Length: 624
Image 1: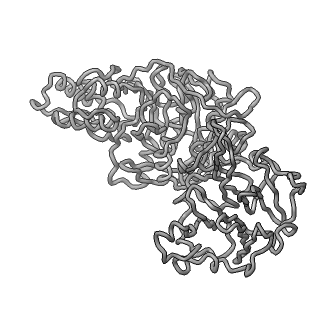
Image 2: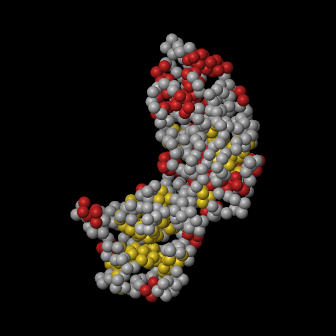
Image 3: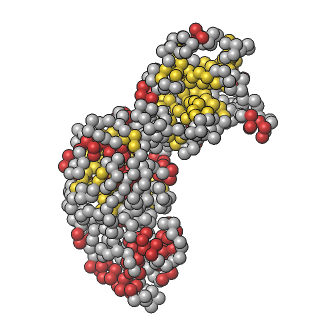
């Protein structure tokens, strides 16, 4: 069983769980586990009436507005260029007059384009579905718990949006370019909207802005960016009056990095290009702001609003605070939610999701839930890439009772960066990747060929290999030895210690079963006996001779990237390119004796087993 350990020391880059970096006056990076508390008093009201959900009338308004009675044609209803219709307003009043008198079956009730209610059963069904989505007791009655759920602060986007049918891709793109996503508690009345011919950002956009891709996510059609590097900017006229400008930019960089750590998108801050070349612009404002068609209405109501593949505006009347603050509204949490909308995500009804429609006071650090990661990867795919080496780092520690226990962490090295992999959560640690030079002192700064941990009853030594040399690592002091307790100085030549082994090598691993180190070079493998300090007789051999394919022809054959024994899976894995092969284990052979010893099961994509090992833009990597 894996036991993860996290020491909250700035210098201990391998084990400390890097939640979120915060900014102080000298730009230092600190690991924090602070609570983010919304200390404002929220009043959730209906956008059309400005009243809380208290009774049957207002509950019908709520369910109709957010698509529970009938999916909302959001791209039409949300068009800021559409003037209010007197006819529709009269129809809306008729609906609620009828509901108030409880005459569902006495007359046909109609609403405007936000939905309609033909009878009481439609209302009850919608209410039950809302209760189910919110984890409430499903009664079909407007009880206190249901009213409380409806009155929570929430985003203004409907939870159920009508699919657009019979539209060309161009029409769909145009329609979604006009789709606002308003994270609010009080939605503006149509009469208060500012009517404009063009959105502020459209005025800056050339006709040939990048192509968008249309993707279906569940019941919702969404748009995705087709290019892989997106530029963002905190616009000059949109700085907040509450936080230092550098802190604002730093928090937004963290928010973009959260998404970059789970999908193959790079986010680059661009402070110099013409604004029409910036993909995502962010800014703060109050009331009528930044030339936007939506108006912010004081504080405690609307935190922010955003558009699919568009921009994000934040209400500067709100008390936004940094991630390490114990009060106010976490700007990081709001920004991550809004960027999720910009990238194409709808609302997700799951506790813990950053995309849930309600803004809920947080009792832990802001994180992407597994469902957030899964849904965004449906839109943009999973990250892929090769690795220089992969290994489990095992060490002994005493527990609180003074007993020796073994702990391990899994690491992936690529170029000059590394990731700690949380096997229990099936994801990388937040805040990774980190520079090798910061986390592993004294070893080469990039392109490590192999990691070997020799571990017997009498030996416990850790080695890194690169080129023609190798380094011994001091686990206790977390740095490479210059001279070990035996008096050996490092780095040393591979040929000086491991006679008969070629160098440089492709990769290597230590097999505890036979206490041999297996070195791989091209299409050959060399076995080295650590007890006799010599190459095993009969080696080198072809890799597919020692590790035969279970399915003929399905084998890496040569030039492996990495081989490692996983304590989490109790198996050996071969890596090459974007694929891995699992080695037949003793347990596998007990279950199926026909399997060959050390056979390789058919290849699988690395992303099927290890998720979210993503590169991030160089500007994001230099945050520590």
